[in-house]
Length: 88
Image (cartoon, rainbow, N blue to C red; front, side, top):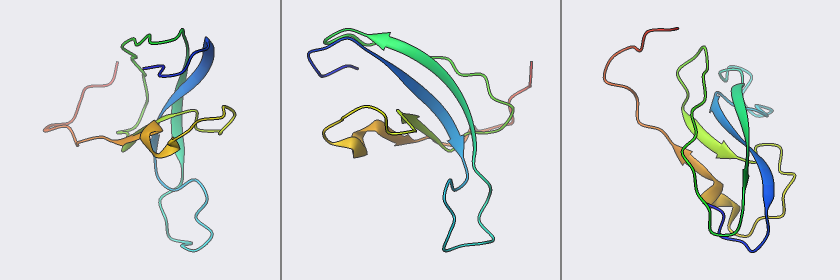
């Protein structure tokens, strides 16, 4: 949901692993799959992201290109699926 006052294109990513694992060389490598959406003020929309891995999180603006207050709200941890999903 765009809680701001402007219209902005932004990327939404399904991610898994650690993007910058400097302190943990055994960390799972970063993987992401992305879509770009454009939302006007107050708008929200469902997003579907096809990815060849089981994502751990959804991240809005993963490359931090948009000025965003309360950036921690731009990330949500996903619950694991109860069973493996079939790949298309």
